[in-house]
Length: 153
Image 1 (cartoon, rainbow, N blue to C red):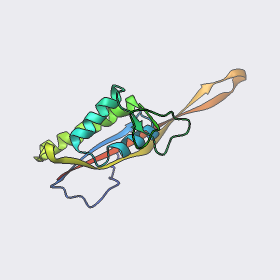
Image 2 (image 1 turned 90 degrees about the vertical axis):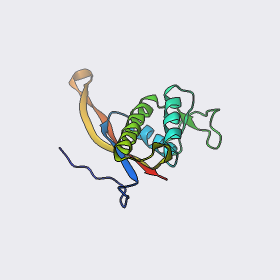
Image 3 (image 1 turned 60 degrees about the vertical axis):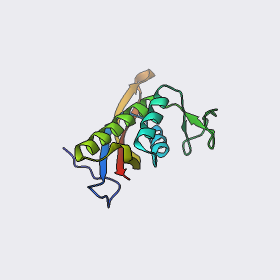
Image 4 (image 1 turned 180 degrees about the horizontal axis):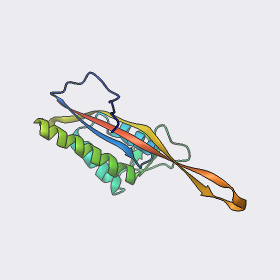
């Protein structure tokens, strides 16, 4: 098994809990935008936000990867957004994992806040797609790593 390190350091182990998802089959761009949307929110706000994204009631603002992305009425300060349902589901599972780790440590879940949420590109799954006249084209799927750190206020 490979050993992974967090991209954040200097955490107090008595007040923080960590949830990680490695090599998830979601878009790294969607995961990055969702992580930037939930960073700084409380645990309950982040969970309800991700559930609303899954039900397509609320959109995620796309601030970096926004080329040819449509506008949404529900967004106020930033009007460009999408509904990345699959990525929201997987990131919600990582968030619940971090919550369960905090319950195991004995932290108060009502006072938890997301202080760190990061998505990074993982390994690539390389395949080929057969084409006409005996040729082939590459078909590459990029996996995603997600880290979420909760801290008790």
